[in-house]
Image (cartoon, rainbow, N blue to C red; front, top):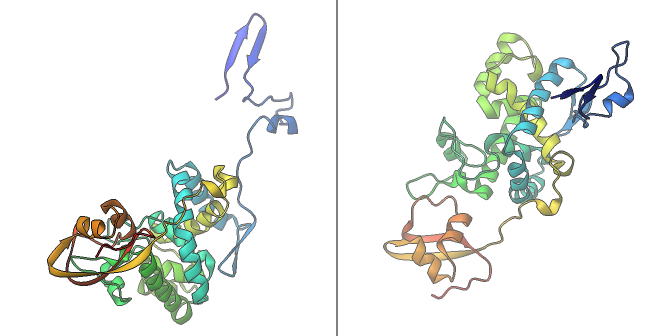
Length: 298
């Protein structure tokens, strides 16, 4: 906000106020008084497809999400969190021959939080509802919810996204819309509106914002230095772990006791195994993650 102070016959203007010339136009020097406003490029590649941001209709939709992310109070934390969740997902996408850009779904779906739960009871970093999770071989019971396991949920998401893109839809925007709202709704909209182009479809507000939000997430969170002033060393690192087998021969065994058996603490077991729902494991054989170099006392 510009501040003005009258002193005698002078008016002092603070350094943030633009100085207008007599013909009411701004000079280059006037614009220099303002910090640079981040702007989107004219085109954006996504998953091997080009998105034309010179189309004002498309650009406005993406800009809305772009500036919304920029103004969000937790965007710096989300950017830091990507340093932890992106590396394993990048590896799995590459091994599956899937586009690296799909990792930005994680930002939109869950802000890269393994314990995220939506109002529709979608759970985990990829936000699977219970039925979809089970359709893609994720265990969901009173003891364990593998939708919260980044590795297993990413495997399921890759299978789901591959099915949508290769078997049902001809573009990634359509496949992503189907990931958000379901393939049937997208196909019905395509048939009713006689369009094969996501950008021309009238869908629910959430689904119409979904792809633009992923594009905005790619632009922002692929460049944390440019937009958030973060160096790569500022990003949170993946938590190292090793996997061990735990045999429970009684009715149940507390995670605290299991942690003690392996020379670690409960908080590390909970951090590394977000899929575990209880404070104990039931009778049986289980694989869990513990901090590296923690040798079993058993």
